[in-house]
Structure formats: structure tokens, C-alpha cells
Length: 534
Image (cartoon, rainbow, N blue to C red):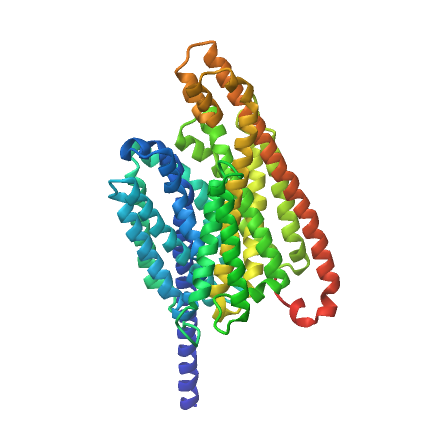
């Protein structure tokens, strides 16, 4: 009896210790997820925060318009260019090791940016920050399956997704507020402070994990071809904001497409592969990737087009304009949480993406009804509805895509997924920005033809430069100019947002048809694909 009592006591003690350890482990994982999510907020905040600093940078560093464009674009260029090599290197060396290296690199780039005394140094600093972001992003996503079981993975992925969705619209708000009070360098000091916090949390809370067995070196040909191809295409798309017919636009895109073609051919024949292109043959990865590309296309295009309306036409400062974009971030977070719950309902899984795109289409259509007299209200409701749809779509799409990726190839799979997503963001800014500029230029063409050259160039350039030119004129010429520029820009915004709404609505219909076809084909495909979580 005594031995039995001792054994029972030992079992009870061990059981309590195990339960306590599991609770601590789970808590630490959630705090680790908080570190990863905070990092995502920081990285995506830097894609948009710099936009509101351009006037201050022009005054402080004497930067030209072309140099300012590179200050903005260099980050996105570097971000996209090395996503694939970064993900593959993480699989070889360890995901946390590369994650920490990314945070350290981002902090170093921010330090260089904060003390920059020339535009060239600032552009170089932004390149370093973009390279670091391209390492951190796929590593943070690849670590989630290692930190959470299947029951909690959907919520963890939704949290990570929501963090990125918050970061982009948060950038103008925080950037504008800091510039108004402390100048443009304060943005980068904030980057450093947040990066240090993220680094400390990652070192303490994120599991080390084990790198995949095999070679640690990267295949040089694929690395060079992939990085060069993505960089050239991004460069061409950035130039497309001005004109599509110029050699500076189509020649980099053509060269980049050729480099990517070389990458695909070599990658499919190589034993040591940079990524897993076979993932694109998986239904859920392929469809989810395309949906996520479309979501980023719409989201970043929306964030690129609307600030001129909020700040120039409605007359709000940068901070207020950033605050007015926050409804899309708020409901994106709510949408991500809703998505994690819906993904547990098997009957609803196939309907999540079509429903998400339908909501986004309705929201975009509401935004397109905004006019000079309606004020902010239609856009407010449109951003709320669009953000809800985009948040649901983002979270579910990422979860569905990553469910097809083996854990040992998590870095490469996450990098491929994020490369597709980031390409969507670049395309959205380039195509929608170009379309907006084209329609605006057509709207003010008659008025510009009647003005002398400096004023004509200002009117044709953008609604912001048109309003600046009007400020130097006396009435009634100034009022005429502002009215024409305002009407032209609102019409251009209507066309762009309505087109996005129509295309997004069509995507919802196509996704619904694909979901129905996929459900019908499940028995023929076997039980493995049928059991794959969506």
C-alpha cells in the first residue's frame, strides 16, 4: 500500500509538472507569435510610412523627384528580389537563425537611414532594410507550424496575417505624426526601437528548431536568376507608374521575364532546388496564391490611390489622412479572426474565399461612389467592408496555402507564397497608379493646353502639384484650376476603384465555381486531398 501510494503520488506530481510545462510552453509560443506579428507590423509599416516623408526629405536632403522615387521603391525592390533565396537559406541553416539575422539587418539599415546625410546613403539604407524584410517575412511564417499544433495553427496564422494588414495603413498615420513633431529621422529611430524589442523577444521566445538535412549551400544559378528576374520586373513596374511605352518600363520587365524563365527551366531539372515549384500543382496552394496576389494588388493599390483624395482634395494633413485609412486595418483584423473560426467548420471552408472576395468587391464599389461633395462617409463604409473581406481572404488564403507545404520546406514554401503576394502589391501600385495618372491626365488635358508651360506641367503632373500651382494663382483662375483637378482626380479614382470592384466580384464568381468543381472531384482524387485542411 505504501509503495502504491508513493507511486500514485509520483504520478500525480509528474502529471502536474507536465501540465504546468505545457501551459508555460503554450504561453511562450503565443508570446513568440506576438514577436513575429510585431515584426510584421514594422516591416509592412515601412512600405507606406516613407510616402508621407517625401516633402521633408526633399527639403532636408535636397532630393530630386527621381531620387525620392528610389527612396520609396528601393525597399520594395530589395524586399521582393531575394525572397526565394532567403526562404531556401532558412530551410538549410534554420528558420530562427535567419529570422534573427533579418531583425539585426533591419536594425542596421534603420540606423544607417537615421544618420543619413545624403539621398544616396538613405537609398542604400532602405535597400538593406528591404533585404532584411525579405528574410524575416518567410521565416516568421515558416515558424508558425513549428510553434502550434493543427488546432491552433489557423488562429496563429490569422494573427500573423492581421499584423501585416495593420502595418500598411498604420504607416502613414505614425509617419505623419512623427514627422510633424520630430522630423523624418524620428521614423527610423522608431524602427530601431521596435526592432530591438522584436529581437529580444525572438531570442527568448521563438524556438530554435532544426534545419533540414542535406546541403547548406544555395544553387548559384537559380539564386542569381530568381533574384535578377524579380528585381528587374519590380524595377520595370515601378517605372510603369509614369509610362508603359518607355524602354525604362518594358525592357526591364522583358529581361526579368527571361531571367525567371531561365530560373524555372534550371530549377525543374536541378537536384538541389531553390524552392518547390511543385507546390503550384497543389490545388489549394495554387488557388490561394493567386487570391493572395489579387488581395495585395487591391489593398496596396487602394492605399496608393486614396491618400491624394484624403489629403489634397479634402484638405487633411498626413496624420489625419493616415487615420482615415485605419478602418480597412481594423476590419482586416476582425476578418482574420473570423476566418480562423470559419476554417474549423468543414462545410464552410470552400465558401470562405468566394465570400471574402464578394465582400471586398462591395467595399470597393462603395469607395468608388465617393465624390467631392459626399466627403469621407462613403469611403469610410467602403473601407470597413473591403477590409473585412480582405482580412478574411488573407488569413484563410495563407492558412490554406501553407497547409500544402511540408515543414522541412517551410521556408522555401513561405518564400514562394510571399513572393507571389509581394508581386501583387507591386503590380497594384504600378497598374492602378498608372491608370489613375492616365485618367487624371486626360481629365485636365484641355485646361493644361491653355496654360503656360510651368503651370501646364504642374496641372498635368498630379492633383497635388495642380493644387500647389493654384495656391500661387489669384482667383478666379485658382478656383477654376482646383475644380478641374479635383473633378479629374475623383473621376479617375471612380474608374480605378469601380474596375477593381468588378474584377474582384468576377473573381468571387470564379472561385465559387472552382470550389464547386473541387468538391465534386474529391472522391476521384482520393482521400489524401480530401482530408487536406483548407
